[in-house]
Length: 403
Image (cartoon, rainbow, N blue to C red; front, side):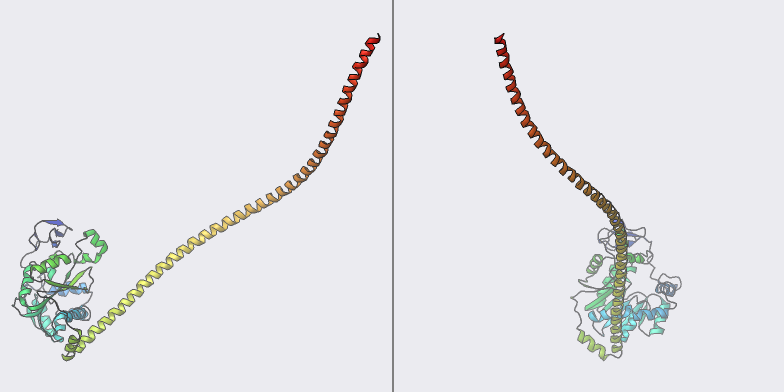
């Protein structure tokens, strides 16, 4: 594909297999598609022929036969889709499913009293559906019928279309005034580049099938293309496989009204298989609640295990720290013991020196008193000496006079 559905030819690289429109942000496969890919003349070799189901879809589902795949679909996604179809589609109304696959949803719609018609490309699969499920199925492309249907359903189809806008316009023309289009198609986050998508939504890589998925849309892109076809009102509901993988929506030209639960319940009580459908939906919801509880418990168990591992690591660190501190305490105790012994020795030495100091002080006081006494005696001696000297001088003078 060399241009986007919106007509923009200015495309940016996304992966080797896909480009990205810089206008509406749709992803566009680089595969060189031919206009005849929907013609299943050879049911064995055609892209969407019987082998697509007999080989590819059986392998993808992990089953051994188409019957096993059909049973799996009926107990899982079909019940989930029916729950929301009853919210937005007139109960018992006329419904066309385009690309019905094995006819599992069309079969459930028939059981629930809807006036159904299904479209599928492969003659072999159409025969299989007629024989196994006894539903109305037409082999070939969707036929536009003005104001014919209360709902047109397209599950896992839209991403395969070369002319998606033309298909939406066909759907719009085929719906009654308040009819709704119900779609499931892959979804990617246009705010993330490829590497970010693979990190945050790794399952999306499964949708990068360049030989089958022509366009992959973000919610913004799907809103744009739906509005371009006249679908002004869009309601997104939770996707069966998760909103990081698919989008599930209802769109209408008029305001979408949700059916009242009581009216839907009364309707299902009236139709022949209605109570069975109700029971399947209730059992599905109970199963999902149980699985959610199991997942929550598993998550809590994993978190508790992680917490235990963290606490074990902290305990190991604490024990190692405790052992190190114990060694440090023992070392400090030894140092303290040595310090106390040294302190005791020093105390004894202080006491001894104190005694010596006392003795020294007593001796000093005695010597000071002796010094005072000797100083007094010296003063007396000096005074006596001075007197004697004066007397000697006087006698000397007398002696001189007598001579």
